[in-house]
Image (cartoon, rainbow, N blue to C red):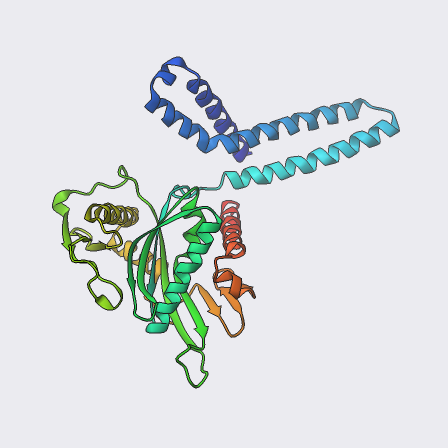
Length: 358
């Protein structure tokens, strides 16, 4: 079987890397040792599972050999039972190995940048964007992920026109990447006197955080502007110019940051977001593909586009990509979104597995 040959190669590579890590010359070179250790770590789960597979396979072969030589009926019955159990165990490990061999998202273990913007629906859309922001804060806190605001544009009614924040921690991007898209809310706004249900939207984009080595930002390609930060309604909240705006000329990408009182900290945060957006940009083949991808991730905010609907009158949240509805909207909007995220991850894995078997 082709996949078993691939596993054999991975196992041999794992052993070679393990031996290299014990080499005194490699140990003396910390950069080289770290590189090898990272490479070994990336295949360790697959290699260890394959070792388990080979162990069970040997036990099964030994059981079959003993069974063929056994004449006692009672002993044969026990051996046949063990053979059946080992076959089932081997099949289970084989399925696990097939999943481990599926192509992995190289960005899964990275930190991420989350952008939320109010879409169609005016003030109600901004209020919904603020609720989504609090929902993700609750989810991140539950999973011990650290959040840090980069930029936030609030409304006088307590809504959010736009918020950009960083999420750091183990597997941050892996946990949140399925949240990219247009989220739609259906409810009766507090200002609605006739009791009519209104529909509003907010858009969410989740980008893997880029490292310095991933993207080169040349001084001649950018312009950095400083200005006074503003609060809700656009009113000035600082007498000194601490807010930062970075414009990247080749791509037209603009990033702003005014969350910190320090101009230097705002600049660092803005560059972090710019680097992540450029990483996203340059990983696409061309500008048209980038625009198409961004539209699929963030959308235009139009009411007809959606990946998920939050229906408050029914207490229901529905993800339209997998057709899953949960009737636990109250806890969901507080950050209890694990069931939905886990279902999306399972659906993606099943799709990849089906594709690999075609």
